[in-house]
Image (cartoon, rainbow, N blue to C red):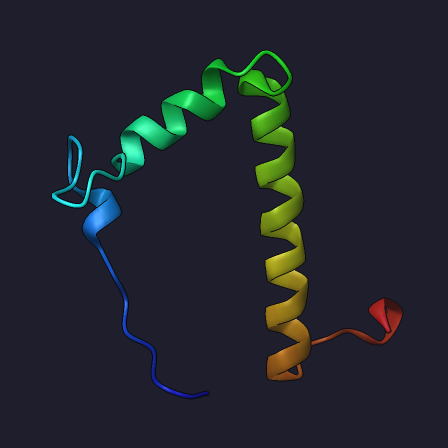
Length: 68
């Protein structure tokens, strides 16, 4: 895997010097959207985490025979 530079500026509270919203502001906007809300966001997070777990297992060769 190649090296990547990680930008942590979204984690800072308040608006960034470039005018972009913080991570908290972004998350609160997602939570407050009528088409998403807490439960749909939780469901989507669960799907993403399960897909990540499965992808990690495949990449490291830890996949069970029943999962192939």
